[in-house]
Length: 72
Image (cartoon, rainbow, N blue to C red; front, side):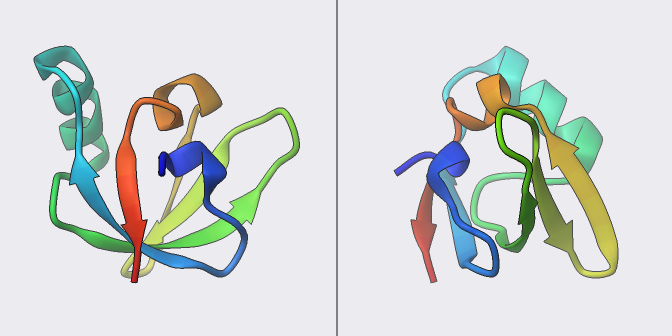
């Protein structure tokens, strides 16, 4: 499944980020493959809000659609 399909309150692990450009974007957010995160909010037709420790990150829906995750 991809990150844009995750629902509010679900914990997930990032299993694959497809290419170097997208990996660089996610590294700027401080996330990488293998990390376990929490979906804090899903804004309809907007970004996915994820939580890493105490930090909230807004991931654009188009970027989220390219990141593969599995539910914890």
